[in-house]
Structures are given as C-alpha cells and as structure tokens.
Length: 472
Image 1 (tube, rainbow, N blue to C red):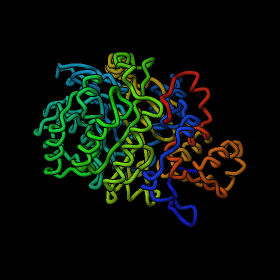
Image 2: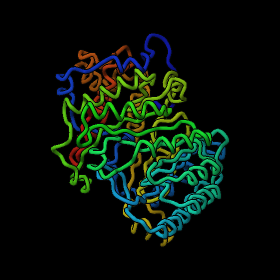
Image 3: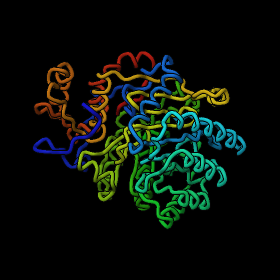
Image 4: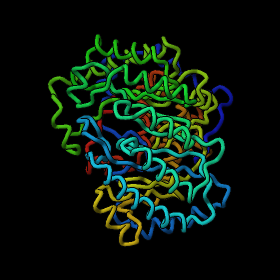
C-alpha cells in the first residue's frame, strides 16, 4: 500500500462531511473512548524516533530523494522560532526575544543549512508547497522577510500553482509586512485567534482584539490572499459556552475560508510554561466536549463543512473539494491538496519527511547553530520506516484525511487482530467494516484518533516514553 489516496467508488464512498454536525456523542461514549493518544501528524509518532538516526542518515536520504528527478515536487517548511512573548498554552518550539539581531544570526544558519541540503538534493528543486511557521514568522522585519525568501529562491523554484503559506499573529503583523509577503509570492495564510474572550486571553497571555484580526483579514483579502485560516482552541481556562458562543459568532461573521478547531493539549510535564495556567478554570470532560459540539454546530449552520479531524472549510474551498474526491492530504503543516510526497524542512526543531524517513533538527537553538557553524547538518533524531511502518502510515493518513481506507487484497489477514479490535467500535456506530474497506462513520469522526490507534504498532512503547493529550 502506497501513500496515494484512492478516489471514492461504489457503496463504500464516504458520507457528506457535514453530517458530523448533526451528531452529538453521548457522554457514556465519550467516557468509553476518552484516552491519551497521538494526533498522528506523523506515523510512527515522534516518541518512536531515535537519536541513532543522525546527520549521515539524513544526508543519505536527501541524496535518495534527489534521485527522484528534477520534476518531482517538494514541500518545503521553514521554522521561525522567535516570539516577542510566551503564550502559556503554546506547544511549539519557541524562542522569546525582542532583539531583531537574533533573527539575522538565525538566518545565517538557515543559509548554511540550505547549502548543505541543496547540494545533496541535486537537480530536485521544484516546490509545490512552501510554508513558514513558528514561533511567529512576522517577528522578522521586512528586510529579514525578503532575505529569507531570497535564500530559499536561490536553491528552489516555486511552481506557478504552488501553495505558499505563512502563519501570522494579527497583534504583531503590520499591513506593510502583509503586503510584502504577498509581493514575494505568498497566497495562503493562517491567523492564530484561539479565543476573543478577555478573561481567556489574559489567562493564556495572548491578547488580541477582534478589531486587529478583522483589519488584517480585510487587508489580506484586498491583497488577494486565498485559503485564509483561523485557528481556534477549545478547553482553555475560563472558556464557557456563553463566551465561546460570542467568539464563534465573531469569527464566523468575518468569514475566513477555513477554521482549525483544536483541543487544548495540556501537557505541563513536557511544557513547563503551561504550569502557569489556572488548572481549576479549565473545562474538562463533558464541559470541554460541549465546546466542541458548540463549535461544530456553529460551523455547520454557517455553511462550513467538517474537514479531516478538526478543520472546517467553505464548500468551494479546495480542501472541501479534495475531501469529496478522497484526495485530501496531510503533513506536518496541516491539511493540503498538494501531492508532494517529500517534505524538506529548515530551522531549529524542523522535521523533514522524505524517502521513507523522518529527520528532526536539534530543537535547542545553540545546538542547531553549533552544528551548522561546524559545517554539518543539525539532525538530532529521526527514523527509517520499515515496510510495515509505511503500510500503516498510508492507512492512518487516509483515515485522518478522508475517513476511509481500503486495507488491500490481503488486508483481512494482515490486519486480522486490528479488525477484531474494531468490532466494539462498529457496534457503537463509529466505523463500518465492509470487505477490505473501513469507513469512519460521522459519529466516529469525533473518535478518529481512537480508530487510528488500533493500527499503531508502536503505541504502547510510545506511551511508556511520553504522555499524550486526550483524544476527546
């Protein structure tokens, strides 16, 4: 089984995505399936990766990826870790700074990394997806934004139909920065919103007004940005259904193309700064799920369709169209319609995914800098995927994107134990098994992580190493 999605055919075709909005799982079902588990932005998941995979392994995989040929598209990601202040809910790798010179020094290292990677990729330089994330990419001033773009364009050619996206914080992004990003070639953007309630914002140290957000969105529309996404988070301290309703009404009135509605992953053991969050004020259990139900209903009533695990998009958005054809795709940057199978990433903690391997750079900025100043790749850990890993990865990717998968001709025997483990979920109305086809039903989409966990051969080992967030 490869990673190419299969188009819907016959009676196994998926139900309309917006049927999700009409279903509300009973509390007993939530209690039964509430567990700690991965979000499956990768498979095998990060806890299974090892520092036995190092710079030499990554170099070899880059060279292997380069042999795919000059026309094979790539996805490129750049991590900009800097933020002016720390949001206490954040789970990303960030560096808090107000010194713009730190960004100049960081771009020096990214330039070195680009040189080391490009020579190994050889003629393979076509990019169909480019994403800048963080941190806060607009921590970079206009000169630095242009410098980063020129560094990339010195090694890669962005295709005419490429998806070129950037993450923005409306509270720190100027109209001039936005205009420059559009001029450079960016055509998609994602804005962090989380929640507009003042009590919530103070609790998570992320103050951002609706007026700032609307102003940036209006300017983005004027400049011609499409595929505009808002990030929302439920499960934050002081969130209540009444105030959450106000946030939902406000963002829906702005009418972005897409929403990502994430459950807050409270992991104070791994994210020490999350210990500042007032735990007693956090909704949990049924109260937290009620916020998700509320968001789902509001999105549905406003005309948005449920996409993948936790996203919503307008019916004519390319993500909606792709899910209808079962060609929706997912990588570390999120859901996409682009078919680049290899992701090459740059910057501290950045993760590359190519030629059947994962490779992650050092997360600590001094370690990342030291490696590149010494003329070597900054790979700190990774994993070579086995044939079984690749097969399960393809399956899990399909489930997380399109809620359907064909297990293949030998699927009934290869996954006999997993199919047996799915029987209780089938009895609960979460999935349908038909021959070699597995369909996640509308009710089951609330629990799609649980379905994916059945096929995770590394799960128990990973659970011994880390604590995952709750699946519901």
